[in-house]
Image 1 (cartoon, one colour):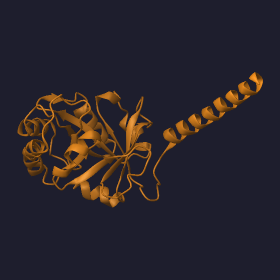
Image 2 (spheres, helix red, strand yellow):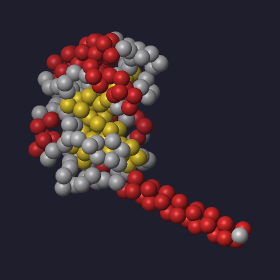
Image 3 (cartoon, one colour):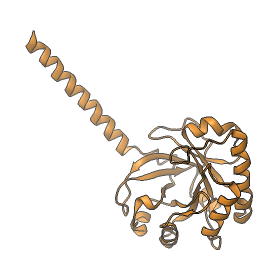
Image 4 (cartoon, helix red, strand yellow):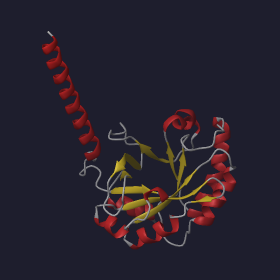
Amino acid sequence: MASRLRRWVAAGLIISGAFAAAGYLYFTAFSPDRQRYPVRGIDVSHHQGKIDWRRVAADDVAFAVIKATEGGDHVDDTFATNLNEARAAGLAVGAYHFFTFCRPGAEQAQNFLTVVPRVQPMLPPVVDIEFGGNCPRRLTPDELRSELDAFLQPVEAQFGKPAIIYLIGEAMDFYDAVMPVRERWVRSLVLHPGHEKWVYWQYHNRGSVDGIEGPVDLNVLQGTPSRLIELVR
């Protein structure tokens, strides 16, 4: 009896291990259908360290959205280098701002516009709204909408195009109903979002790209290369 039980336990462990290995391989290798979503991109910040952008560009990456600022005074110290080197490597480039609940939207807009140059074509600016990594304060939906409007108005006026909103997790559940009508950047790891109401889809948060040591977020664009060109104008 004990011998039979050991065999069942061993078989169960083998099966569990096989499922775990299959799940890991699926996660690491997942990539959306290239026929349907041919334009690939990444989003980066100082967490990626020094990036070899020419190698990145050669690894089927067409665009990069780069962290510029956070809150009213924080600047990502790799932004300027990443922006210039990614552009020089031939990528379409854009910048994003991490929106904090502890500073007025107008101050955050000023921080972003001071740091992000608008002398060359760029992808639309992105505002990142999430609870993770944010300050403890939670704005009411009406407060968030007011502060977000104060951020978007000067930023969009300077860029001459609508911003893109990245809203995820609990923040999406809490604030989605009051969001202004803008194109969205959605996050759905290794699963299709289930709809096509997005401009970028972040499908991986532990991806691998040549030229970057360690994991990086992977994205696809909704559309063809001509759509990417339209966004940059």
